[in-house]
Amino acid sequence: MIIGSHVSFGASGLVGSVKETLGYGANTFMFYTGAPQNTIRKEISKEKTEEAFKLMKENNINIDNVICHAPYIVNLANNKDDQKYNFSITFLKNEVKRCEELGVKYLVLHPGSSVGLDKFVALDNIAFALNKIITSDIKVRVLLETMAGKGSEVGSTLEEIKYLIDKVNLKDKIGVCLDTCHLNDAGYDMSDFEAFLDKFEELIGLKYIKCIHINDSKNAVGSHKDRHANIGFGTLGFLVIKNILDNKRLENIPKILETPYIGENDEDKNRIYPPYKFEIEMLKKGEFNPHLMEDIRSFYKN
Image 1 (cartoon, rainbow, N blue to C red):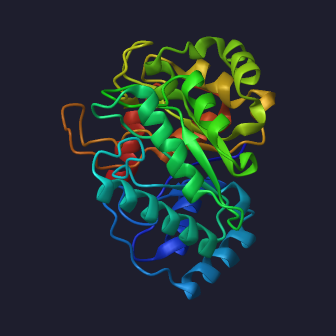
Image 2: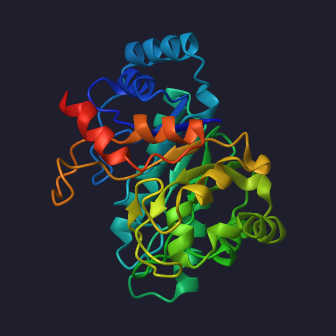
């Protein structure tokens, strides 16, 4: 199983990400090259990156399975403000370069939000931008994330993802990142994952799937809300997620957890403790741990 979680990049750069990953018992990870809520970026340290490569090699983490995520703030779907739209394109070109500096092959991208535009105008804006970003000289593959359809988000249906891929010139440099919570909230029944994959194969092709975000959901199918839940504590449930992880058609695809942090108690809204070490252990064992929250709190308090 190729499994990991979102980890911090921070001041330590890639080496810090690797150390956090090892602490969770994972063999891959996903990171942002800076804060996901802004576009401020620091220069990448070559020395720390080389240290990270050495640490990954020593611990059997394949850089080809490592995922970078673009920040949420960029929006390729809306071009009402030329300056903001062009900034998003330029910024993502630079993110691709940063991925190449780090030796990372995959950059996950939220397609964007129409914000008052017609949906197909928004999709065409994304496709135009992608063809500016995805050029023949880059080595990185941009992965479109499947979205929940919250607000004016686009990319919540397979038909919309297909529309974008069809309009990208360089098909070998575009791909898809499935998100189990988003798919559920968008209206896809994850309890019949084989049927979903059949539909994906028919419309788009399974060869385009390069990453899966593994998240439970706090909402019912088709809610269009995008609220992640911890594994086994949402509406998908442990068995549905385990079946997705065990699916042979996607066994060589990196699976990344983005589940909520755990507070001191159930009423505490401050996300204090990362759950990944325990969720990954639970998924590897293949047995649901109903005491997961208590175990996480106990571990970090002690």
